Length: 112
Length: 227
Image (cartoon, rainbow over all chains, first blue to last red; front, side, top):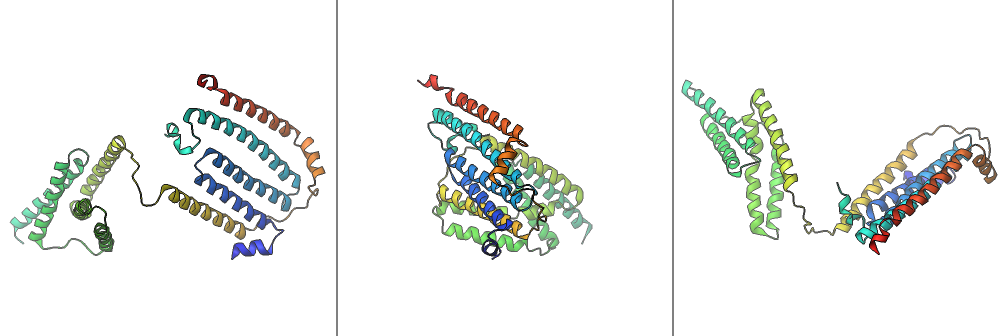
């Protein structure tokens, strides 16, 4: 009930944004655990980053003196995420070349 | 109780202790000696009871746990797919439950308890090492497909995480709202990016460039070897 109240009665409040950020994070986490392929894990990782970015934006907009800081920080997170995606995609290509699969559970040689 | 009887009981106590230690020491190397130690200790305990007629155990509630465990074991044996195999293992576990009581009787004073504990820890460590060395992991077929299990468990974990986070959000009182210096428009953002955050902005571009170069290097390696 708490959650429904939170989302229904305070559409423009900090709590609603934080709740959506938490949901995004949890969905990303679920996808990260659930997906077998590296592409799926990459997309889920991006969702997790989106959840974190939303938190930055919300706090900066509703609480900080300068809302621009949160927005700039989110832009930087996007830049880092782009770099990460490029690296992960290249790793995927290398993995596919060696294993002929991008299923994360096939990468047995990397197990400890 | 006569002098002789007390002497015999002391002797039986020592025997129980000795067999328990034998059982612990041979835990990792000899099944035969191990079983001998365990069952002889059990017989010695029964003999001690015959001599003294004293019941050394109080009611702790553990009995119910054991009873539940045994009931579950018996039920699973009845409905098992391989009754013979299952019955064999049931008997084994049935005989292993008194192990707790054997330890309690043989570790009566503190010195003995300490020794048994030390030997037990050593034996467990060695067993774990052996198990790790000899383990031959094979994928045993389970009732539920692995995918469903992983999906369910990850859904549970993620759901708990979401609910927990949202409850924290709902219960926390955040700091009061500050007086805002600007409205956070695109114009403000652009100005900030090119003045205050200029250095970080340039650094991000360098990071991106390096990432692209690194990606190229990683993706190109091994390309020629394949063709």
